[in-house]
Length: 292
Ligand code: HEC
Ligand code: HEC
Ligand code: HEC
Ligand code: HEC
Ligand code: HEC
Ligand code: HEC
Ligand code: HEC
Image (cartoon, rainbow, N blue to C red):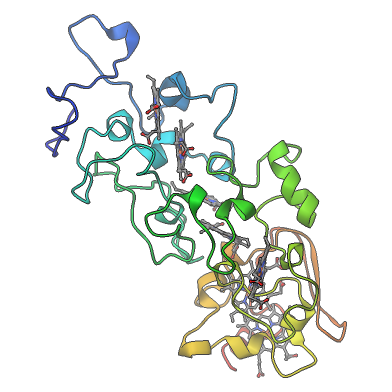
């Protein structure tokens, strides 16, 4: 079952797997604790890591059906048996999976289901450092800070294995977000930290390049500047990453909660239910949204 890949020779002298399925230790065949598609975590990582009852892994990626090995690789990969694509040997506690391996930063891309190349037995994390959603270079998620204000990623998303929201609305993991912004999930309401009307002229300098949300001045201010002035900033479509190249909306332009969107004159421009996607054709034609 071992492929012809480069082994980490200074790790195990005889290249023999050290973790054996206990009942099969009869000396003849020594299979590893198996991982992969269709093999539940209870049969591998949960033998030792607190999961079956403690549920250390329980956040958004659990809800999405992911398993330990989809991010970390199997036993040999985590055990550092193979040389990484980088030519280095995996360093425990340091070389861990990355959010950006699966979250490319473009709402039209499907979200990845595997954080490494399936043909790489070392499970080297896919590098996508230019992703809008990348950790700081060479830094673990839990030590990374966002680009807008130096706020810890964890402050808006929770801890790595319990990324908000938890699928159980009443779970403790959801309490922080519900208390701060009235709904579970990523902290996305600017008013959690900024006063109302903090951005009278609009901005794209929120977390991950976000604009103000549920903010009348962004929809149509009384002054000169509102969202239309940001579409072609720097000559490139600034809205495409989250609203799609066709401006019809993607999973990155969903409202997390029911919204009644008013402009600065108090005129209701649109009403949306939680989970609906904001298309640029919601309040005016799609064609118009490419002007400006
Ligand atoms: C036989 C028991 C056992 C199994 C099975 C097991 N682990 Fe571990 N794991 C440990 C122990 C013990 C440590 C702590 C090692 C230390 O303190 O350095 C650990 C540490 C880790 C670490 C942190 C250190 C590092 O290498 O970065 C990760 C990540 C990890 N395990 C992932 C996994 C994954 C993924 C699986 C399933 C594919 C798994 N483990 C299966 C016992 C196990
Ligand atoms: C969606 C991807 C993902 C899945 C699935 C996942 N992990 Fe992790 N894991 C990570 C990331 C990211 C880190 C690095 C944490 C950090 O940056 O602070 C990590 C770190 C760890 C560590 C090191 C200790 C720590 O908290 O840093 C252990 C141990 C670990 N994971 C075990 C597991 C086990 C066991 C499972 C399955 C029950 C699992 N992981 C499932 C992404 C994942
Ligand atoms: C192995 C791939 C993978 C990795 C690594 C990964 N994710 Fe995800 N993530 C997913 C998938 C798949 C979904 C579900 C997408 C969907 O709903 O269409 C998801 C969903 C999410 C959501 C949306 C939750 C919601 O319901 O609104 C957030 C937030 C998120 N991930 C943050 C993170 C963070 C932070 C990290 C790093 C700690 C991370 N992800 C690492 C695959 C991954
Ligand atoms: C101030 C709050 C805040 C901080 C801090 C923050 N984020 Fe986010 N994050 C958001 C918001 C809001 C979104 C949703 C963007 C969207 O849906 O278009 C998001 C989306 C994401 C997603 C994509 C989720 C999905 O559904 O595809 C990932 C991955 C992510 N962030 C990772 C990170 C990482 C890594 C850091 C730290 C470097 C970080 N975030 C810091 C607010 C924050
Ligand atoms: C978790 C708290 C938090 C959230 C949520 C948050 N911010 Fe911030 N933001 C800060 C902090 C702290 C600063 C730094 C203030 C300073 O340096 O004086 C900042 C600074 C800024 C700045 C630069 C300074 C300024 O006031 O012009 C902009 C622009 C900004 N945030 C936009 C946003 C937008 C848009 C959102 C919502 C999508 C948002 N922020 C959500 C905490 C937050
Ligand atoms: C980082 C992702 C992201 C980018 C980039 C982005 N949007 Fe959005 N947009 C969203 C999300 C998420 C929502 C839903 C916000 C909400 O109401 O919760 C949204 C909603 C809106 C709304 C409706 C108001 C609202 O608060 O819901 C308008 C108008 C809008 N976007 C315009 C733009 C324009 C114009 C651009 C480009 C200049 C742009 N967006 C770029 C993520 C993004
Ligand atoms: C919540 C309602 C709403 C949404 C969603 C919305 N807009 Fe607008 N937009 C307006 C309003 C109001 C105006 C002012 C002109 C009008 O009344 O049509 C406007 C005007 C514009 C203009 C100026 C058009 C002109 O004739 O000069 C552009 C460009 C534009 N929007 C781009 C976008 C883009 C790009 C998106 C999506 C990313 C978007 N809009 C989403 C409400 C919205």
